[in-house]
Image (cartoon, rainbow, N blue to C red; front, side, top):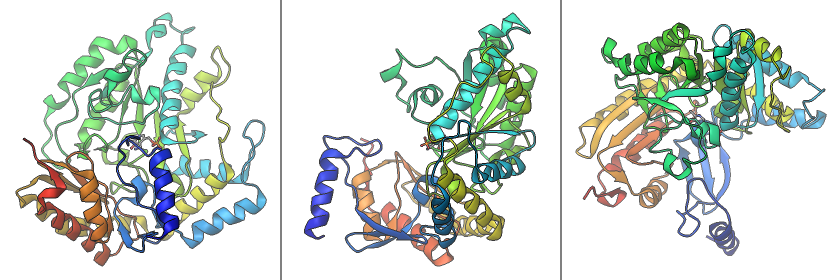
Length: 440
Ligand code: PMP
């Protein structure tokens, strides 16, 4: 580490806030010089195989020539213009693609800046929808609450936080200001297990008791990510759709993490063959290049809101429809099909299944699971993040575990040898006591 790097890191440690990190005793950060393909190159010289896709965002690898040129080409025309009163081809092309690729019935697109904001937008759409229908039926006035399941995660902004798991989402800190939502137990029948009708009993009761107050039900389809990499039975999602229809509640699916092939389907909703009323997309929408998100909804929702009291949807971020982001999103979606994403995902899933599933017999492991490009090892003890991270770097990989979970979600272009290195690194740290915090 040279002097310049040491100085940069010292400033970072003292002044730059990192995600979910203490400022007074921060976890170490590693200085990155560049990234290329599946490699993250540290300023200190190590080249690490990326197992995280930079939190599910990088799809085709770093520094991709086609994504780079899409950005450069767009920047020579314009990087951004306001979206109020102006529009452009990159945004129009992107919205056309999203409407064509997402489940049937999602025909209107609202572009925004980040996943959390797209969830705010989805919730606001649901609330404004019922507000706009009050003239039809005054009873709709009370449809102002959200129902969701425990173990969910939908973002860090306030409305999104109000539908995150109350325990891991630390609701007690913000309870005075959070919207009050209803919570059903988390889905408990895993993907691939036998379906049992009692699974949705508690959920049904909540619909029965509270439907008069419910504007929408929100859920991550098939995979509860931050809530523990829990893969649940598609029938659960089917039942959610039925309950929403039966009780006049809108269904919002948060495909921010699962969208664009990650679970083995282009969108996780497809496992249950359902269409939601509102869908949120983000993370890998731009192939991990720039932040961009989208909220799609049905014609009925868009038209009802537009014909309601306000006459428009009450939202409009400054960087809505950012041209650079839309251009790179178009290029990333094109690449998905050029590269045959289904084949890429199937290959990764196959390799992960044969390499990672056997770790289930390790004494430190509670469970291993694989779905699409997601591989998770649930341990019996919590990881020591700073130490395990250091060990992973020494082993030449970038894997960032949390809680009791060591998981990987590699870029689609990863090859067999690189994937083997990632899993071998996990197998290695499982044998090391220092990487875990004892349960006593
Ligand atoms: N929903 C889900 C399912 C997510 O995984 C995330 C991000 N981890 C978000 C919403 C929030 O997205 P962002 O971090 O872009 O605000």
